[in-house]
Image (cartoon, rainbow, N blue to C red; front, side, top):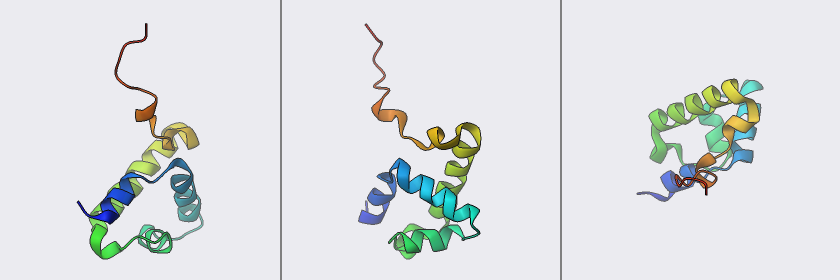
Length: 80
C-alpha cells in the first residue's frame, strides 16, 4: 500500500470539512487534493471521485457530524 493511500485513509474530520468548504467555493476535487499535498498520479481520479462522492453524501445527510470517523467510537462490542 502506498503512502498516499494510507494518508487518504487518515484524513481527519477537519480536512474533510475544509474539502467541502473549498468545493462549495467552486474548486474541483482534484485541485483540492493537489493543494492538500496529495500526489494525484498515485491516487488516480477514481479514488478522488469516490472520496468526494462519499464525503458529499455524508455531509448532505448529517452535516459536519457526518464527516466524523465513527469507527473509534463504535468498537462493535455490546455495552455492559
